[in-house]
Length: 95
Image (cartoon, rainbow, N blue to C red; front, side, top):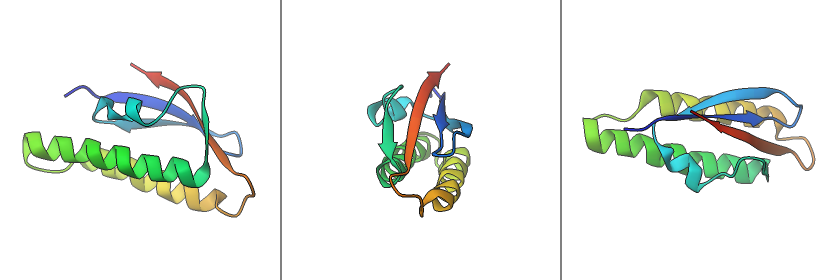
């Protein structure tokens, strides 16, 4: 199963490398685009949920790395939830 890494930039400028066990991330995000925080969180939930489900369909168990990545994204998202107009940029898809 092809995996990928992608780099995001949080509203405060902090960059974070992220992981997906599936290329489905490319269906939800575009490098160079920024997303409102809530939209980014919703898209992350859906994309990483699908990625984990694909692993489960193939191997019989959900992807703990995808679920862990989603948990990290959710936790960081809470940090910025009080900022007005908070946006998250998807900087790149990395091989």
